[in-house]
Picture 1 (spheres, helix red, strand yellow):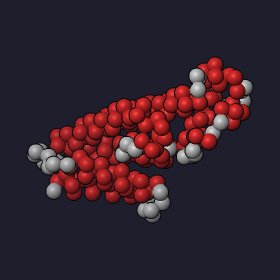
Picture 2 (cartoon, helix red, strand yellow; picture 1 turned 90 degrees about the vertical axis):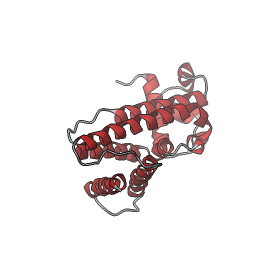
Picture 3 (cartoon, helix red, strand yellow; picture 1 turned 180 degrees about the vertical axis):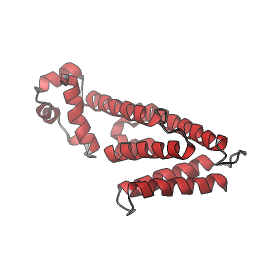
Picture 4 (cartoon, helix red, strand yellow; picture 1 turned 90 degrees about the horizontal axis):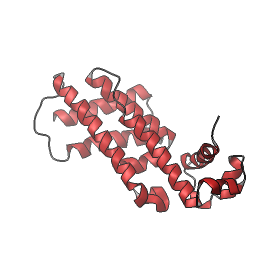
Length: 194
């Protein structure tokens, strides 16, 4: 059974995931969707802005747990593709939020950008560490040759991953998910090995 606060957060989450302008969503609308009175919302949140900010933080914490979880796969390719699958899941769940995580843009979080920047920075840093661990695994398996990384290689890899995932989520690439994972994997290998 959901708590009252969870009902409120769920109502706001549905609007965030749809990419709606939260500035136009009223407390009354959220209270109605949560099947509670407007005054009950104010028992949990001091303002509409506080409610929206806490909902963003809740969602970012949820995505952080998904994206930074240890890989279940034991080999390099499996771990790499598992991480890509997690990214795709989060992107499908909330395109706008993932766009903000991958390429922080204050406009994506309306006026909450500065307050949430630390959350998105933390997620990006954890994802970078996850991919570094996966790359080290590729070196240990002999798939990738150890050498000094080229300048900006991380940015190029991020561009490949985020670019192809965003195109897929937006319907610009007409392939199945397994082909998408393989495309990202193969192109990342080309960049790493080049």
